[in-house]
Image (cartoon, rainbow, N blue to C red):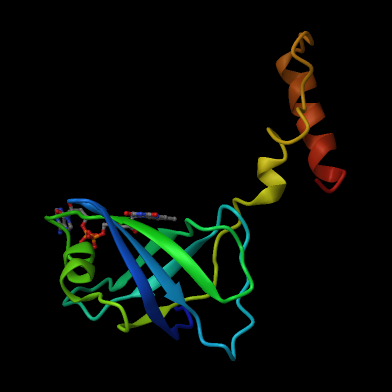
Length: 140
Ligand SMILES: Cc1cc2nc3c(=O)[nH]c(=O)nc-3n(C[C@H](O)[C@H](O)[C@H](O)COP(=O)(O)OP(=O)(O)OC[C@H]3O[C@@H](n4cnc5c(N)ncnc54)[C@H](O)[C@@H]3O)c2cc1C
């Protein structure tokens, strides 16, 4: 599958531990960049590999400044994360996709904020399935 990448800029890096870094990345102003909890970004890296894209969950809350955060764990034996460790600095241009992924609010609403099942309710497997189907078809 091919993705469209946009030239984003690293605006801040926080090293949390030896193997965890938080990267704050800004999409171009010209882009209407939006995302919702649960989505991820695909980063295209100039690495010598058949697969150059890597996915990273968006770790920040939606904001209107086109900036999102990725929290990346170093895989010393990998190709992508050692590249980001050695080459990503404030000001580095990064090829980033728009927000991707469909495991978002609609699915989360099954567990929060309104519980789907009453704690005391004892339901058969069939009734539970029916209740989930009704919940989804109601547009949550
Ligand atoms: C939806 C999604 C969200 C994600 N979100 C995050 C996130 O928020 N933060 C995060 O840190 N990661 C996240 N990941 C994982 C991330 O995409 C990368 O897989 C991860 O960073 C490792 O990438 P890498 O390029 O360093 O390692 P890779 O080069 O992909 O290698 C990964 C592992 O496979 C081994 N390997 C590679 N090639 C071979 C081979 N030919 N034979 C045997 N072994 C091999 C490597 O030794 C290494 O241990 C997410 C993945 C998905 C799918």
